[in-house]
Length: 199
Length: 198
Image (cartoon, rainbow over all chains, first blue to last red):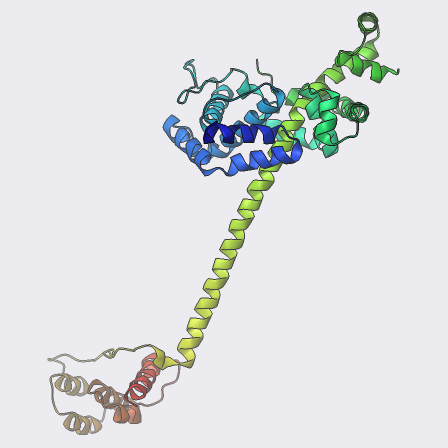
């Protein structure tokens, strides 16, 4: 296995290893100077405003990490940085769909991505703070358990990731957290309008 | 099994086929249950957003930490610059001889065609006339006040690098006087030149 693939596998493993590993991996990507430079170059080449850098860069890393967590069979055999660049490019184009009427492929090097990876971002940009304010009323452990549950992890996997003694304990925790979340949803019925539609 | 538990099991696909069908029948008739069900669907969708939210928070903190580091570096740089300037100024004030002052010409008055006696004498001096001769002539000029006579004699000695004589003639000027800054520089310069020669 070459160095590049080893690096990719190490990142994927970290992202899937639970909260601490995931946080470490996304911060590692966020600080990666080669990746940052790649995004700056892409933004200049595409003629997009320089001020969009932080949004495009952050969205791409989050969409990539979300995708890795949600697709347990996800493997990457191409260049990691190019892959994240393509996600960023596609996410920005989708967000500004009216500006980009062409349907040209978003490709860099030999990288192609599935259509919906760039759509893994759920919270609408304009309402992000509001949604976050509502969701932050759940404790961090609750958010974590519900995250894995929504990503179709089974209770055994959730128990392992969260360090619970058994899948029964994970089930109880998920039940309690989901009940809390439902109460929040019923308390703030307009929250649905704040999410992305992806039509 | 209470209603919420049943709802969760239905969403998770953990109910038996019969129980699922019964639950679906109840959804059609029980509006409250249907409302809970809709909330549960939305809650599951929101659960997907929790991951995104947590990661954004992590990156925001990382970015803040990076910015904070830059703020500390800038604050430290400004502090070092202020201390540096302070030290440099203190050094200049306490030890004027630590840097080399160069002679600066005074604002010599007069031109070749001037009718003013002082102007003419200073012009002759600058043309190389004997300093003692000009001094005697200058002391005899009535319309020039004594302090200004002494000042120009001091300047002439300074121009010829006769420091001791220059400082003897240099009069005191009040801070409001036009020559006060020149006199202050004059004293520093003479002091430095004398120190260098010692």
